[in-house]
Image (cartoon, rainbow over all chains, first blue to last red; front, top):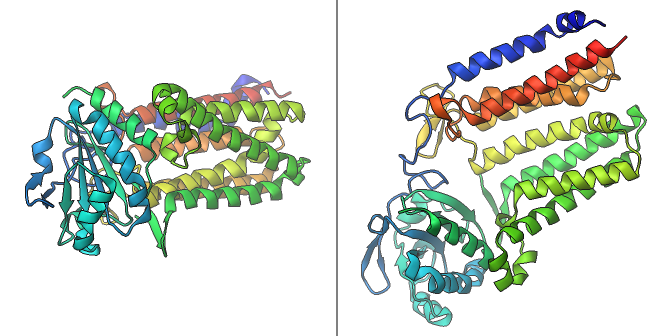
Length: 186
Length: 243
């Protein structure tokens, strides 16, 4: 078969390649077409939804006040075995990186937990980061938590970089993500 | 969107399950089609498993090498079940290398093997779309169209379902072409690559998470177009070389 015959036989393919170029031009991303971090949603690439909860000690902590720092939002409960399993690794990561600008917001999904058990849990694992109480489940719902634990790695700009559903998270996973985010410019 | 399925105390990762389902269906298709092309289904099973296991090991080792200091401090992380500790590029390279070595040792003809494995690859593409539908990844731009879905705080193009529909249509088209022409000319795999790249090129135009280049061009579309053009060009050259 000559080359011209091959072209004639494959004209649908040539048409597809040409139409592909047209489609690339037509579907160029208009301003604001992609997320660009503008919309709050519990998904990587989106602005982290607002959190404002009280700690065990009664202080109010707001996620918005932590802009400029790397934040791990970890949603957990005392009865959840993988939550228990990953807490020591989270505590070690907090101790290692806290001075470099890493913060943990451990949101207890109190709406599905027994609040009385939380102080014992905190003492058992010697947790030093803030434990927030989601008494009415607002944050649990806002972050569409379907499974515990659920963790959200948030960059200095307030954008969620990664979501880890389920656990336990490995210490290496925590450290690699935190170190990457800490390297980003404030 | 259904990222996890709670079965008693177990939280099953639905995106992963979708991949496993596609893997199982793909292997079944391969088993069905291999003998028709004079290939041993068991050899292909072994090829796929060698590639998958090597990809898994390669992905972990590559990730560990890139984060050497961290893995030195926690060496048990090497055998962690966390999928987040995998490097996809390292995994792809290791899987490809293992498949090439196994294929060479078993004296498998490259293009014939790729053709027989095409239904498997096509099924995996459908699995990828289903996996994205479950996790909410690869989401669409905002839209006012009536078939938009509520996802991540807005009504969006259901790009995961566009991709699924096209993957299934491609699978059906490949099956129909196989039946009518028999595909004895070693171009089935190339045709699949062109169809899949075409589907990617189309769906990427509706995505809300595209990597954007200068001028608003989408990087994924440029890559998909190049892939499609290369596959179709190769088919045309093969046709031209026929006597």
